[in-house]
Length: 295
Image 1: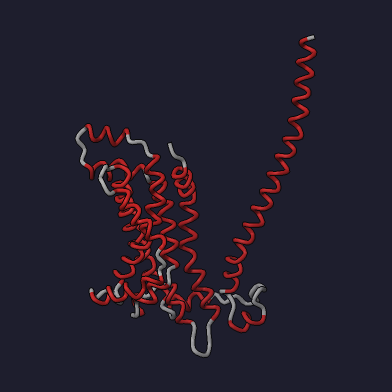
Image 2: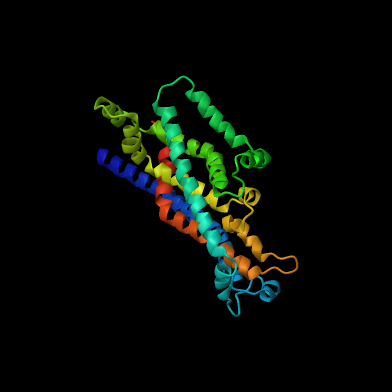
């Protein structure tokens, strides 16, 4: 009787597994369909912007959602040469890269000091940095303008780099904090036993181990710095120091606006961020996953 019972039980288990597999396939199909729809809505504006950049003003107003009948590739040449976009592009790269390196390095130092070093006011200092997340950017423009005026940093690239660094420090520290708290201390303790200094431990051991979360923090900082408008528009007046987000105003006149040139400038401005995201996407996912797991 026992073999008969075993066969009956296995057949009943097989019957229960078939509906569950079918349900799983349907659920995955619905999920993939939903993700495909979301992807279409995400990609469609970029494709539309590219076609928009190949039109002149007449075609933009008469058929804004159609394909360009006669693509105006000269819009890109015009903005790069006549519109001074090459200088704005270079400025954006310099400001963004400088601020990202400075922010990530300082935030790593602060997070290392808070999580790895024992001192009395570490949690208070962390709380002060987190308060920075609640301060609106626009409420600081007048105090910052007065401060930069007194120390002669108005119309200077340094004012932009310092502003980017200061306002990105809190969010960068918050991103690094979870990863540092989950990071094992055994290697650092072994380095201390071998007589390594605190600087050697940070730069040679801890910092390389945090490269996945650093990539995540860097891309987030990069997106914010590249797209920032308010600080550059407030602190920079010379055309030679402007960035892409502010320089686009050159194509907006009192009576006419070159919409094709604006579209070409926007396409040029999103290419570096899109490229960086595609290159670092795997490291970003690793950093988010590693920073969210504790213990």
